[in-house]
Image 1 (cartoon, helix red, strand yellow):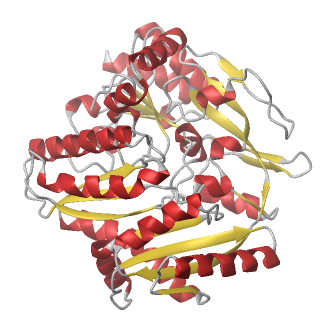
Image 2 (cartoon, rainbow, N blue to C red; image 1 turned 90 degrees about the vertical axis):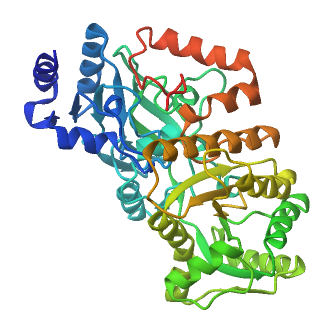
Length: 467
C-alpha cells in the first residue's frame, strides 16, 4: 500500500517533490513539544505541491483512498498543532510562496507558504507593514498566521488580528474543490461571507493556499522599558490601562521577577530589581508617536513604576527585547518545559496570574515544578512556564506532565472567561471549548466539519482532541 501511495502522489507533485525516506518523515512529525514522536505521528509521505491545483488533486486522491492528510506550514507551533495526529499524507506548503503587492489596488496577495519575513520585506518596499509579529517570523508562514489568526506579540486592541485585514482567500476544501472567498475591493463584504470561516480554523475546514490582505501604511514606534518592585504593579497597570481608557501600545510585554533575572543576565544586562515591563507605542506620524510615548510614560509612573524611560539606543533595546526570548531558551535547555497561554478577561488578570502560579503545588504528574511567567501581558496574555529542572525524565512522565499542565490551565481560561489568544492548539483545547461554550457549540463545529469533510480526511485529530 505504501509503495502504491508514494507512486500515486509522486505523479501529482513530481517525484522530486515527494519524500518517503524515514529521516524526512520523522523530521516532519516533530514539533517543539518535549516528548518523543510516536509511530502514529509519522506521515506515510511528505509532498510539496506547487499550487492549489496540485493540493486539490492530493485531497481528491486522499478521499478516494481514505487516507488522512495533514497540512504543514513551517512547524513553528508551540503547542502540538504541527504534529500529525495520525499516519497521513503530509502536505508541506512551502512551494506556494509567491508574493505580489498591488499598491494601486490597496492590497497584497501571498501564497500560504510565503514566510512572514519575506512578506514583510516585500511590503517594506512599498512603505507598508504586516500586522503580525511572531518571534519565529523568519520561518513561520503567512498561511499559518492566518490559519491560526495570531497577531503574536502585538496587542489585539492596538492594531487588531491578521483576520481583520484579510480581504479574501483561495481555499481548497477537504474534498478537493477550489474556492475563492472575499473581495478585491478594500472594503470587506457585509453579511454572510466565507472568509471568516477559514481564518483561524487551523486547517479543520479547508487548506488556505493564497491570502489577500489590505495594505497598511508603515507605523512609527517608540520603545519603552519600566521597572516595578513586584509583578503586581504590572498586572494592576494593565487592568488600569483598560479601565481608564489609556490607548494600548502595540507591544506590552512583561517578565516576572524570576523571568527578568534570567533574561537580563542572558543578554548581559544588570539584574533588575523586581519585574520588568517592555512596551512599544505606535502611531502613523512622528508627532503622534512622540505624544503617545510621553503620555504612556506618564501613565506608567503614575501606576507606580520605579523607573520608566524611552530606550533610544538600538543596541540596548535589542538586548532588552531579546531578554524575553532568552528566558524561554534558557528554560528549554535546563529541563522539561510546559508552556501555556492564559488569556483572561482583563479585570481578572491578577486573579488568573496567582491561580496559575498556585498550580505548581497541585500537579500529580510531577511535584512542585519551578514557575516562571512572561508574555504579552497588555493583550492580556500570560505565558506561564512550568519547569521540571532536568531532562532525565521518562517520556510518559513528560507527556502526562504536559497534558496535566494544559488541562489545568485551560480550566483557568474557562473560569476567567478567556480564550486561546495566540497559539493554534485546538486539539488540546476541546475540554476548554466544551466548558467555555457548551456541548451545542462543539457539536456544531463537528457538524460543520463533517459537512465539509465527510471522510474526515483533513487534519484528523485537531477537532477530536487527540494528543
